[in-house]
Amino acid sequence: MSWTDERIDKLTRMWEGGSTASQIAEELGGVSRNAVIGKAHRLGLKSRPSPVKANDRSTEEAPAPKPARAAAPPPPPAAPATVAAPLEPAQRSVAAAQRIPLPPPPAPTSAPLVTIDANPPMAPAPVQRVVSVGPGGFLRQGPGDQQAPIPPAPPRRLVPAKPSAEIAAKTSVLDLNDRICRWPMGHPGEADFHFCGVKVNPGFPYCVEHCGRAYQAQLPRGHRRPPPPLPFGNPRVR
Image (tube, rainbow, N blue to C red; front, side, top):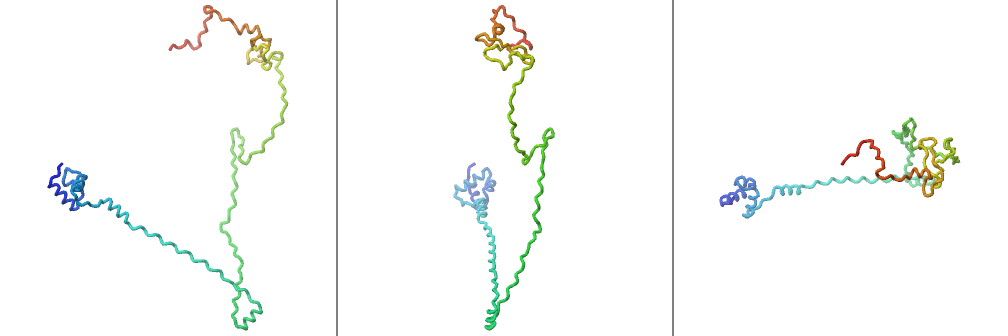
């Protein structure tokens, strides 16, 4: 929208009359508030103070609160009154002759006051012992219930156990070495389980008889027996 002379004159009159930029823009129509302010600055019209800055200035110029009046210092403690010492008989006679007034007799000293506290300190309450019961009914020890460590028992002489009658004359696992046959005889869970114990075949861990069982020649491929079937069926084809 173009600024005509009529619109410029109307803007100048309303600006100098104290109207705000929003009121001028609403009166002219088709322009915004910023356009009115920019046109006024280009025309050289007198700028007006911003209401926001005026509010800030009024806040800054607010009188500061007066500091609180300092409390008056407490009066100095009064000096203790001096008590004159009693005069001797000779001094009394001289004072009476010179008509000097005698000092007043010293005030009788009062017995020291005994203050009784209205709220005497209470005796400490007995500490309640808490006992924790563990599983099975035994009582757990607290921090102050620890007993002195029990001294260790004297060492006992170990006596080898006698073998059972089933393997008394047979080779056990404690008798194995590199010179005897280690072929197991029986099942480990049986009472008479033992090892062969015969002299080994040189270079082998078993005797000649058991080497024949442990090391067998592989048959040709055509004479081999097929493996037993799997207990859970044929293998899955991927």
